[in-house]
Length: 136
Image (cartoon, rainbow, N blue to C red; front, side):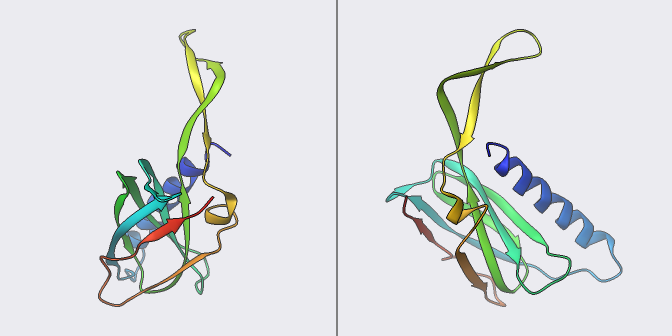
């Protein structure tokens, strides 16, 4: 579960790279907004815009910092996936050099990432107000 954010952004990066390498480049627009969790700005995390009507499915994403994000996305209906990690109290792994490394875990409920119920229609001109208020 704690690798979801890395996976999401990794897939988004691959999709963006692949979109630029094909015969037909897929047009994207800029989407930005705010993300809150339990009424407070999400300090850090990742957001992904996932296509709902294309095969193969394409991911676009960006980083969330201090509750704000900016990302590129295709126009149209998207499923939104949001993830954020924090240290698990008292849990550590041993690093390659023998030091303790804190175990991190995604703390955003699955209904906002792995089993996302969030939907957003990206307009043709992009958006600067694509805000998501997540409730635990």
